[in-house]
Length: 398
Ligand code: PLP
Image (tube, rainbow, N blue to C red; front, top):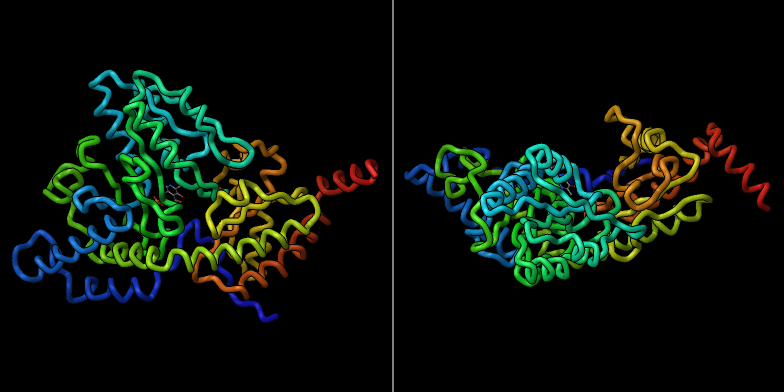
């Protein structure tokens, strides 16, 4: 088979679609006006922001006035957590509930809040990568200000029972934020029906450019303190001349993702299932996270006796771009906190592979990964003392 380049790391970022780029181009060229200016060029840019805000609001089922444009998902997460905790501290509420397997945009923000004196409860996740609602109920306290639980996990793709969590928070009178950065565009989200008070999203995960995101804040839930003081943009709460082209791109991208959601999800799911079936044929492999309650395009598989970073480099050599739960490139020898949180031993967590498909992938991409995987894993295992030990143990047990 002729090798072509297979991009299978869409949970890290996605390519900009042609539809999105076409919509952005006028705002990168002749449409350069400042959206706050009163002459025609400015007004047109202002109208483009109005349209994009409506497009985001329509997808979430909220009002456009409840959408604040931000620079990325991390910014939205920081604003939601720090803003809400600082605001509610004045009412004596100093307790935050989140989970152990959030993205670092949440975990490091929670840690920063702990340093300021706030108290944080980290709910456990179980082998299937899903929290238990009883743990949430038991963690609620009279001084709980906020619950922040991710919609879908970025590594293992597991989807949390968001509507049930929303109902519990509503009954307890506690604010509920969800980091939906991985979920938007892949699963239907209705902030009203799910009782979500705040929600973070990021454009580059659904074919919009990098550097643009949004935070939804339900009207009547909380007025967050300003994130950036300055001009009147974003109701004066997040000042700074708007990135019109990227915001337009995000509006078009979210609309397109939801227009085509069922078809795209079915396509990604078929690719993921074929890949998982093939990968699990390799001895001493396991799927991480629930097989059903997961994002349609996410497959996360561990292979014993294999080191994740080496696996990625060898797959790269075979023309496949994917990701791993091994954090060696970041200078840490610790495997991913997500894989450890679902009970994987260090050794197995180190040999993990995350493949994430988008609607732009093809069945030929899956063929290429399925062909490359056993070859690459076989080669790595030949060199692995850990694998030698596993083979000896297998022989002793048979
Ligand atoms: N939250 C989750 C679940 C993510 O997967 C990511 C990015 O990977 C982020 C937050 C941060 O988003 P951004 O890269 O837009 O800052």
